[in-house]
Figure 1 (cartoon, one colour):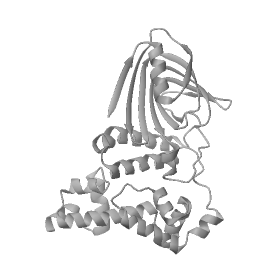
Figure 2 (cartoon, one colour):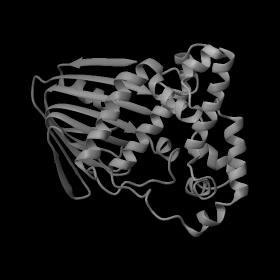
Figure 3 (cartoon, rainbow, N blue to C red):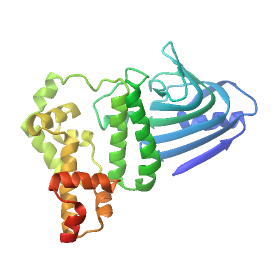
Figure 4 (cartoon, rainbow, N blue to C red):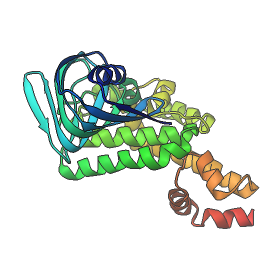
Length: 302
């Protein structure tokens, strides 16, 4: 659900930002500010938008979360770790490491933020650490921001109460974030990972997936069930099945959707959403690739 706050008092602005982003101390600000703040919360993901006539400088304690931003107007400034960073309209960025205090400033901004917890990132990859504040390229930055807007404005408002769609949307957002900002996920598998990527781990993972396909399970959940790291799990699926754990899970869910279509347990749109698809067109493409027939035809012939 969207929440909107309009403020015209500097102390009130300070209080709202404190509640949203963590403990901060006001260093300087213009008189007679006007700020509008919108926020959307979906489980472990928080979207925010801040805009108005305001100039503000704050010192911020470690936020303990990853806050990513997109500057639509005005200027945003951060200083942490001895580095000054200025963000201008169109820039995409990581604000600061979760454990690092920083100084921040905004001037007449239209600033959009996406906040991710360490735990939600750990559901996708092992112990990720980001090593840079700027995207690896302008192209991936544009893809990341369009994905954020699509999930925030189109998918999550309509499917926020659907656990599978929400989980898939969250994983998509995290995966895009990992592809956008420099981080440690591309390190080579360790000796332990290679040792653990054996058929027994794979069998445990497959059993867990097939028993829990209707639940909002993550790569971390599957790895815990297989008693290996996420990286070892991914290596096992690549080595023995030439696929990924989440692609295998999607195949199992498509099989469940196929059974629902054959039994006529709802419309194509309802069945697609039941098995984690917010967009029936994507479901139809995946279903046709797997069964060489459209889901609507399967439903009619069931």
